[in-house]
Length: 219
Image 1 (cartoon, one colour):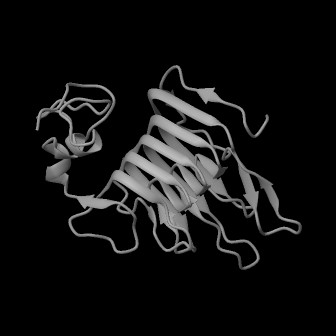
Image 2 (cartoon, rainbow, N blue to C red; image 1 turned 135 degrees about the horizontal axis):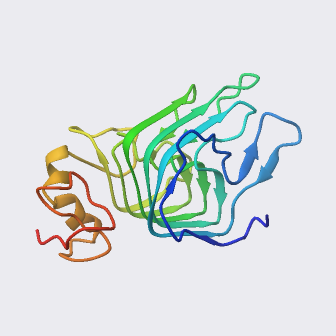
């Protein structure tokens, strides 16, 4: 598959009982390094990927995407995910729910929620990506507790992005919001750029989190 291939989701996907191979390969544990990063546009069109299960043992970055380089990810959610990246020859590879690493990429209107776990000996982990270098994130949220690591040499530009936590996480890009702020509609309002209607919907009193279905939120 060409690195620049575009893709769209036309329905929700349930990956329960399936082991997922990350899209876009980056492996620094071998010489020469293997870099077949994803460079295309992935448009979820408002759909959700459920029950993602990733377990990388060969040194690649781990996530729905392994590495994105100059690509665009937009308009989708991941609900319930377990991502594991085993260390190889002393190298600590990055692991995130949406991507292990994003370089010069764009992430827009993406969320991760539900039961989320990221296992890696690397300090860089994230509900969106472990690391986002020289990239742009907008209108995103995660309930993981870390959006993406903020310690890179060229950190991401982040707009209207949030993670679930009662107090700020100094290692994360984005802004923390409490469960009450998510449930009460404030998160949807902020994700929509402080507008009362937009791509982010939520039926207040029923939905604990925003999504792509539900009612317009007037906050």
